[in-house]
Image (cartoon, rainbow, N blue to C red; front, side, top):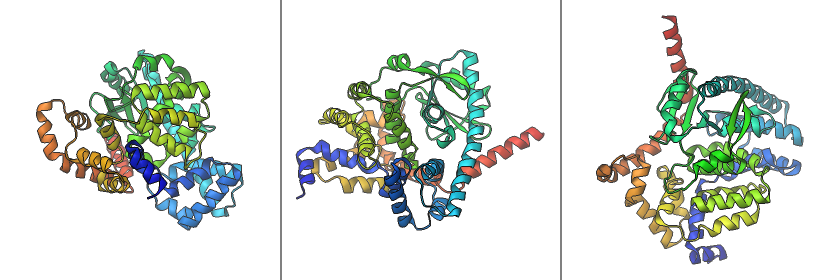
Length: 420
């Protein structure tokens, strides 16, 4: 019996943390990340390890559809900064990717400007989130941050009004996978750009958070040329880590760069406040899981005291906390297999089985947005089918060219409408 396994057997919560680490990027993606953020020697060494693993990096990245392409400007910046030994074809490939991202960001920024101006003119307060806020306030060059959507936080009672205002900037209601009734409103620009209006930063209702404190600690910054409120660094880091934990598309790794940039803005006092927020909010498991990755495989500057403080608050998690946490890695059959292989103690395996076969009514009502408990028996009955459908849905949306095809189809329809 290994020392690590013995420690997990004595501390079931530690084994649960090991199970949740199934959401971490794999070794190949970690090498790519370290090639982008490490110092000169480490970055170059990780790039050599990455290329030896994939063979032809250009061919590998071109054939990949999990997010590597969106990180090429960051790799290009690291290659120039750290003097990577690349052939002429690879240098050309990285420069072209950087130029494409610059052009793409110019278009994204123009749409952001019209949208934020619409809210400013209407007098509705909003807070810019994720790429919309971080690209211009944290990154050396905004276009280094691949921007796939616009995310804004609005007062929860003003979601409908926020959607109405967005229509004046060219957005229409849309069925987005990120949307959830009463929590997030999904819209899409006439040119295909998704827009998510958040009424709350966190989905699971068990996470307690003072919205007034969030708004009070936000600050004003210039985003896309418009004065807009953004979250404080500790609230931003909390949102980035928690959102990445629950998002199946965390594989695109953009969250890791956002978190890295935010880590560099925190001092000792900020870390103490951050740990207090996590403990009071009950978000210890998701935040701890992502922080351990940043501090471990990625070797990011995360204080050990902060990790120890957060870990202390997760020693005896209740059933609602465990169910909310397990819902992140158990997405599809492959996620279930990965989780089961990591569950080394009987207590954690029983928790996984109970989560799969008979989760609490509160979890089912939240997870499937069941408005009334009267329909919960049906949710329990159809849950296995919904589980398989969800796994297939993410696979279908990941098919190469599908998003591009639907985007072009939408644009063609708009052009045809204008010609009439």
